[in-house]
Image (cartoon, rainbow over all chains, first blue to last red; front, side, top):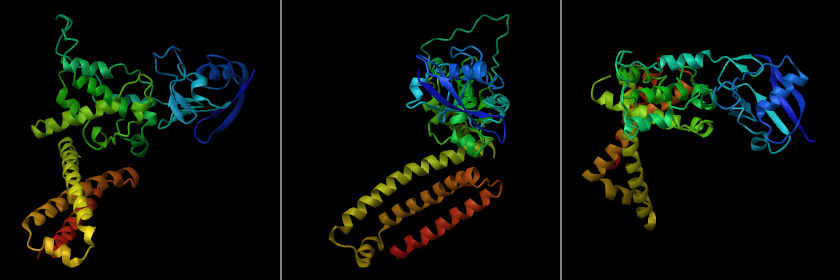
Length: 237
Length: 111
C-alpha cells in the first residue's frame, strides 16, 4: 500500500510544518487523512469538523496551497504525487494547528447587515414569493452559503485590506437586498458601501473559483455595486 | 468615506473607463494609419493645428485619464502602501498634474 507524505502545520503563530506518513486508500478524503493522524499518530493535533458531509462548513483548510472543504475533497482529486501539504486557512488568525479563529469572519457578516428583518409578525400569514420572480431567482443563486470561509481565505483583497468585509458577508447581504420581505434595504446598501465594502472588490473571482458550493460571490458583489450606484444616483444613500 | 462618496467614485471610474476604451481605440487606429507613410512632426501638426474635432477628442481623453488614474491609484495606495486619510490629497494632486500636463500637450499641438 502506498503512503502519503503529509506535511501539517503545527501550533499557532511561529509554528512549523510537521511530517507524517499516512496509508493511502481508495476514496480517501483530506478529512480522513487528518483524522488518521489525530487518532493514530499524534492525538494532540487540533482540527475542526462536525457533519463530514459538506453541510456545516467547519472543516475547511488550505490543501496544497488552496482553500478547500476537506470532508468532500478526495485525495486523488488534489494530489498528483504522494505529497500533501495541510495548513490553516489563510487570512484567519490561527488558534492552534489547523484550527482558525472565525470570529472576525462572522462579525463582518453582522457588520454588512447580514441579519434578516421583515415586517411580518408571527401572527401574520407566511409571505408568498413567486419562485420565478427575479428577486427570488437572484436569492436562489446565492443562498446556499455554509460559512466555511473558503472564499474569505482565497480573497486577495482581504489579504491586502484586512477590514474589507469579504465575499461571504457581501454575498449574504445581497441575498437580503433581493429579498422581497426585507425592510432594511437602504441600511444594508449603506453598510456595504465605503472602503471596506463592495467597491473594494477587484472581481478577480478567486472566491467564485474556490467556493465548494459553486456559488458566485463575485456576481453577488457586482449586483451590490449596481444597487448601491442606483441608490446613490437617486439620492437615497 | 461616506457610502455616497464611495459609490460616486466607483461610478466615475467605470464611466471614465468606458470613455478611455473608446479614446484609446481611436488613438491607436489613428496612429497605425498615419505612420504608414512615415511620421514627422510637421505631419502631426498639419492634422491637429486649428482642428476643433481633435482638440475636443484629446480634451475628452485627458479629462478621462485625470479622473480614472487617481481613483485607481487611490485603491493601490490604500491596499499596498497602507496609506490612510492623506491619500485623497495626494491622488487629487496627481489628477490635477495629469490634467495640467495633458492640457499643455493638447494646446501645444493645437495652437
